[in-house]
Length: 281
Image 1 (cartoon, rainbow, N blue to C red):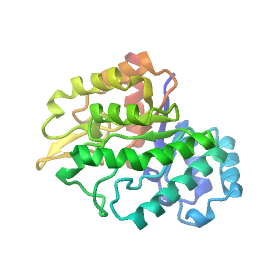
Image 2 (image 1 turned 120 degrees about the horizontal axis):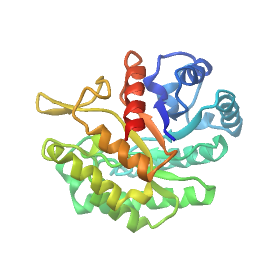
Image 3 (image 1 turned 135 degrees about the horizontal axis):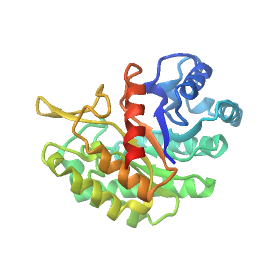
Image 4 (image 1 turned 30 degrees about the vertical axis):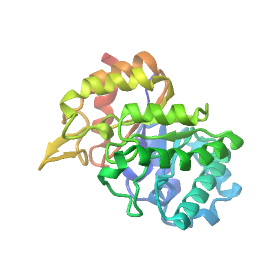
């Protein structure tokens, strides 16, 4: 029942067709595809995202029996610059159109910052920032509804939607069946809360469990006063992976689970560990 995959840009850097083959050959059944991060040999900017390209990719993924779990579009919907925000929104719309033809699970995004640099500042965690994000997300989700595509937001501690309770507020405010969640337990960890990780993980499945549609899985440690995950092999760090896998197995059979922040040298070791823990959960 475990549907385990990997982000395309965490694989070896090879031409696109070889990349898709390699994902399959390594035993992964799905991927997260960030076009500009995974593909370098041909144009994948907005102007190039035609139905022809989407259907070419759809055939290639189907040939290799790989699902596109997430089409990544990780742009800042909290951007205060009106012109930049307009371009960002156009890029989301293009990814949503592309996803509708590619046949992927969802378009995925993190939740931004209240500056053009897309960096952490205390204001990201304010009520005003949350309202800005909700207002900017709403038309994107409405576009996704028109196109029959799922839009998924990913809570990240340093961003506007920084914890599980704020994620619940966003879901309730938008109130759309087309808005779901990508849950990465490590991304909501901070120096202040990581020792309470079991409570945070359980809270996620309690408060937003119904909306969790994809799981990102990586490990973490604390180094030089920071939460660090890359290039840690899953199982070497501090994340309570048995708890995560138990909850996934119980509540989310066949959900796409994506290995994140891995490197080619340890991806298969991480994969084997995750599969073992899931089997024993």
